[in-house]
Image (cartoon, rainbow, N blue to C red; front, side, top):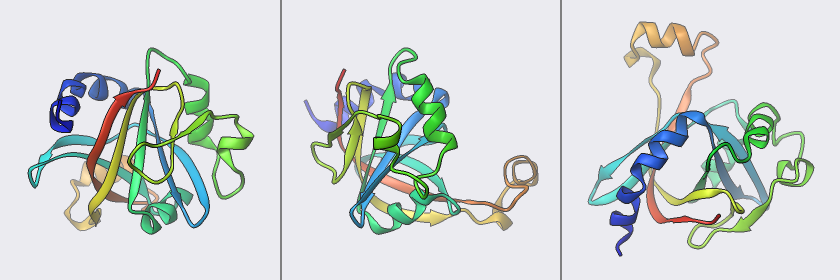
Length: 168
């Protein structure tokens, strides 16, 4: 089965779980980190299955994403890893190795450089094809006031889905 078909076969699970939380993981410069995300988009662009994730400029993960070509998203099934998602979203990789300190089970990705969350659920491995900084001047004023009062904006990363599978 093609990666395109597998990606779209898992679309409902991805779109259902993402607002509940997922792990975005990346490895660069001999460091791996994971953070919690709850926003993103999936679709089909440039004849490829695409997952778009957002990372704020202030996050430790941003520097790793800038240095890496690939990233992974691990979506837990049915509330699994709920506590780890909360911890990964409140603690910074600048201050600790989250995988070690939080005992986050990691496995090597199949096609991306870096980790996935082991025994998690739905895994997407991506290669960054395009990135774009969110332009506050083009942002709806209501969204800007609600989500960017502190002017901590996002970089948008458009990743080609290289692999999509379950590891639980």
